[in-house]
Picture 1 (cartoon, one colour):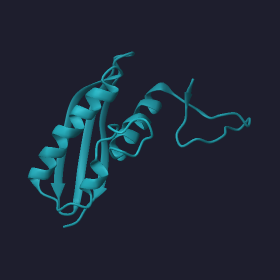
Picture 2: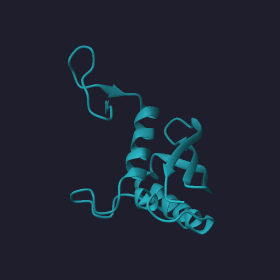
Picture 3: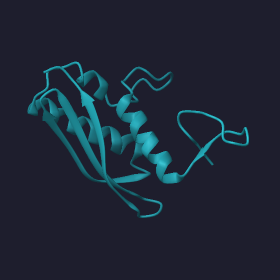
Amino acid sequence: MNIDFPFHFDALGGTAAAKDDDHIREMIELLLLSGPGERVNRPDFGSGLMQATFAPNSPEMATAMEFNTRACLQRWLGDLIDIQTLRFSADDSTLNVVLTYSIKATGQRVQNQLFELGGLP
């Protein structure tokens, strides 16, 4: 059973569960939105992507974050997913992250998950 995130109760008053593919997407979001040092006993968990929202946006910054994020995804979720594509683009004050991956257990390919983060112009 996968616990749904954020934690809440289901209609019967028990802990809400998530399907496997939903749970994997939630884990990806947690990894992307956590900063290194935020997690107790896991000081190296997180991508640092949220700190990038406060940095000036540029193609160079997007490339550096793409490299860092790919390494984080492979380290923490490499046993669950295979990254097909990971693209970062800097558009004005928005950093767009497009991720396509396949779930190793089922072989199911998840198409174009988009994550948008606002930054400084």
